Amino acid sequence: MSSTTPMMTTTGTTTGEVATTDPDVAHHWLQAVYADYQPEESNSRRDFRFRGTYTQLGRGGVSRLHYSMSADNNVEPSDVLLVFEPSDGVMKVSWGRDEEVVPPGTPVLFPPHQAVSALWADADADCVCLQAADVERIAVETTGIETTAFRFTALRPMSPSLGRHWDHAVRHLIGAVLRHPDVTANPLIAGQLTQLLAAAALDTFPSTRLASHPRVPPGYATPAVVRRAITFIEDNADREMTLSEIAAASGMGARGLQAAFLRHQDTTPTAYARLVRMERAHRALQDADPAGRDTVPAIAARWGFADPSRFASEYQQTYHHAPSETLQS
Image 1 (tube, rainbow, N blue to C red):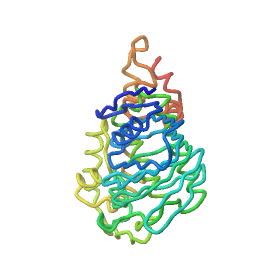
Image 2: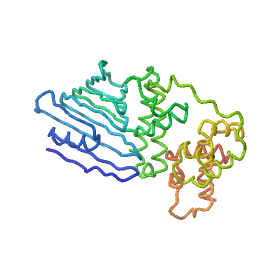
Image 3: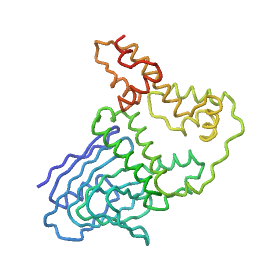
């Protein structure tokens, strides 16, 4: 017996799911979600049960899996990075000559462009899928390391506390997606969430980024550079922007622009973009008809704020009253 929901490939937030007792159905679904997945069964098909849900989030996605039987999964992601975190059962991973048992509650990395094998046995796990290009771009922006020199060097977190940091980030993301699927379908919010996860992966797992020496930014950047960046941010506040895009528009490198913003604006380009979006949300609340369809959560989501309570807190700090008061005035 099996039931499936077809995978969708549009942008935003889309979902696919399956519940089956047929290994062939399960493996077909997994190959549709993870193109480089290659299952090799290691026991009988009796009492097989599989459940899977996958939610596409911008360029990445999150999934929850239950695998009842023991099976070998060979994955060689070409352009994606996967992070699995088992919550129950047994999971053992092999990478080159290294082999590790992954206890429940511990995230494990499947790096891009490198083959990893995983043995599952009656396991439940969450999985995050990220585009390698997004992770590599953030590594370049924050250190200046060349893309060709960047790679992950181990599968386990650098420390238990960093593993817990990753777990918290994923729980927050999955909770936001499940609670507010219409909000996280907003490409602006989806892009921001995937960028946060990419940065969290770089902070959690060992990589050549740690050994790189940041490029020294120019000793002086003119206010004109910052003005060009500000103009770009204000003209594009309604869509996702990367630091690399803002830097390209300003005419200098990402790290140099960071230093210039701190010098001339006492903030960073991405923090400035958030301030601009807050101001646009403030204007939208002022212009909205209190008796109309616009609500505080809807306006917040339109300008990239996925969590209504966090938006209300930031709004209160900025304007010294609740957003609902602005809407009703």
